[in-house]
Length: 150
Image 1 (spheres, rainbow, N blue to C red):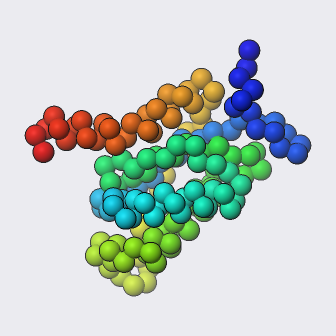
Image 2 (image 1 turned 180 degrees about the vertical axis):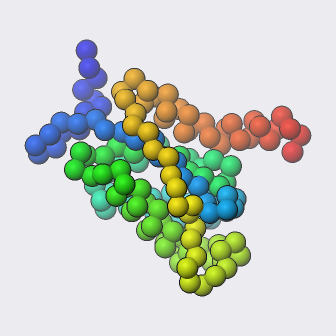
Image 3 (image 1 turned 60 degrees about the vertical axis):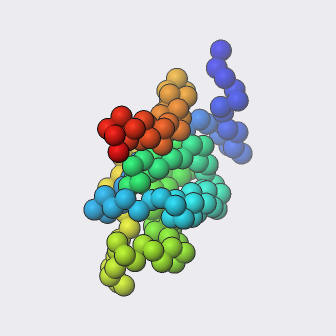
């Protein structure tokens, strides 16, 4: 029997569309920590709310990339979702986090995010596994650092 809690009911459709989305910082700069991480997570949730999709799980990996589990209605394309998330968040981060100017010093033409991204559609059987993987990003990082003696 299908778990109906996962279904979203729209005006004309019933859906369960989930995407695992990953993108990183330009030059893999490790700047997604401290205040930048807090602001980034807040801004991404605001963007999702504004454009009508949800971010069910979110975590930073190695301070240079972000993992998201996004649930969206069928009327929104993944391309637009990623474009909104990356574009608006970069602009907001440059405004709210002046410490980013050390790594991205040019006043014009600066880019926080790498131009590429990874997206994978997630079926209902894999949703818990992907959610756990995203939630465990910081835990894995801490365990790796402890095992190397850093």
